[in-house]
Image 1: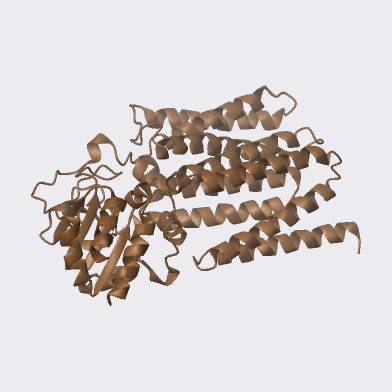
Image 2 (image 1 turned 90 degrees about the vertical axis):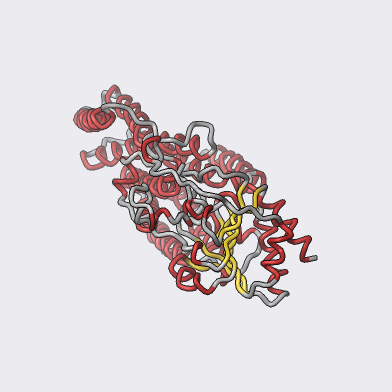
Length: 453
């Protein structure tokens, strides 16, 4: 078997492993195995590419592998679950930066044709905007910068002029690639464009932005693959880009909003808060909560970012086991955009060894909600907000929500009456069947567990 045939066969095997692994990622029960299969495919692709390109200075490659492995292992072990969204943003950003550097490096390999120059320009543009856009997303998610949209007069005009400048500099670069002045201008404009694209987006829309930036990082890798003529990089980038945009569309549908609305509406700005909700709340203490739960035959837990902040997932699992021992059915209602990244709640509950079979999607749990005795809402403020159905001037009106208000009794675990990440008041807090259990979610649940014990 010739070397070329062996290399191409290895690329086909790696691509097949990518596709199969991606398929397994569609289910929480098989996601870990899918991740491992995809990682094996990437290992094969990297090794074959190094052999194909006849790279001799392997000591630098090995040094990079060791450094990357150490950083990855430390990140996996030390980064808190609450910081996973911003960590994903960093992954997206550095993936985009890597594609930018690969495209840039392609200029020094050989004489390039027009098509290759265009792919180099695309890898630089998409990679650059992905990097800086992801850094802004990281800042918003980690609350190092304000999560509110940054809007100013003439913003669309500035962005339009920026796009024209990018097109002009890309054209000049393709016409005269030997003059790197336009290359540096294109890199700088791509960085600026990434910042300008993300700062108008509110923190509540960050899950959509994360999946969109993930798609961008894949597209940048695909363009870099064309630039250097690497088939497996094209395949991998295409898969990431396609899956990211599909996930983005799914999440937009879950919010009943278009991608254009997410990117340009400035959702979460001071002017988008809607009508203030007034009324009286009904607080409850852990002992009274125990009495209600002890008599319940069905309970649904609706988790949100508040559960991640309190690290309450293990307490939730312990309460679930106590309720099941008492003859109560316990399930979990998962909204597609709960938390601050796609699948955030699934990851948290998986960490606590909650069975995948108990995680019900929004439509499935809503059909059962009128028969549920107790709905326990843990920090999921915006995805259970009845204003989406009842308040026509609310910015989330028409957004599909988990109908927690239809349960016989609702427990809302919150530290205070503050609004959620979207900055919108929640009429659920004032419903007659709602009881507010104030305090840290993990401590509140622990006190309820003690009552059971």
